[in-house]
Length: 454
Image (tube, rainbow, N blue to C red; front, top):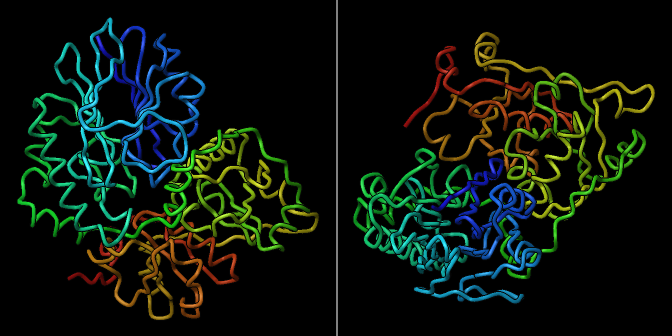
């Protein structure tokens, strides 16, 4: 009897897997913080016999090399991937025994598209396929994006992605579980996953890669691609070189004088508390990236790469969780950190900075004639409707485009409030008068604001 354990990386919108039988298991696309995989194996009482990568990842630092080193597992990496470390190259059709006693084998299936060397792995029990680890190839209701390697290859890889998805669908039984790495919020996916579980049979009826002709599929895929997070440029090279082991030991503690000095030096001081607490009181000049939001994605996207970051957390647990999340994308060692609240982070005589929060109803009541309404949603969200007269700067561009925000009090909104909180903190740190609209965008029209569509 086989098992498959899912290791969720919610902040990054990814999944890793541990799959095996009674004595041995394979780890698929493991995260950098491999203690999760080791703990899952210990709970099952199995050894990790194999570690496999579906591709060289662009959205997180892999833990595969370190996991293989610690466990002695065979490390399988697609043969076409150009890497600088020892591994076992795997090619289309290669098969390994995962747990002989349980009759479990793992077969490699070349599935180029997300990357040129992308490889899926099919887990079979007694010769029958039971699960396909599809990485960034066939996802739930969609596919991985094909534009992360080289712009000139994008259309070619999109067509390869179509062929790869159809190859899997044609080769595998309808009841085979499809277990992708991307698609749960990761920007490596070309669209959000439709649900959290699927099979080959379901994808045959729901996935446009399997229901549309290739030209239609490619046209729609390319038209729907969003901006690529800036930190992706650093992930592929780190993974190809062989990442260093993760270091999650607590960072040095920063007192109020050090926090002030780091702000004065132009370093980033990031407050991890929720946006409500931040708006009510914070260290002037600090930025708010909620620990419970997509911390790694947005902070790594926006911070100048390599700039020191000091973390301010509400609790030691929040700090440890954030440090783990950031290590997954290569922000390894915070320069310093502190826990508690503004009263513990400010020097004697200093008062917390603050700014108001509001709803769309309040914006409508006060009127938009004198207000600067800043929309920080993505282009695709904006295209579905926007407040008449609003300024549009996606949140990941706000920090370098502050000069484009017109004078006046800025009412900043997104789709739900989290990204508005980030942008409001950036504007506040720059000395602008700001109101964070902490509301769902659907409420804008309901409040009587003019929403332009089409």
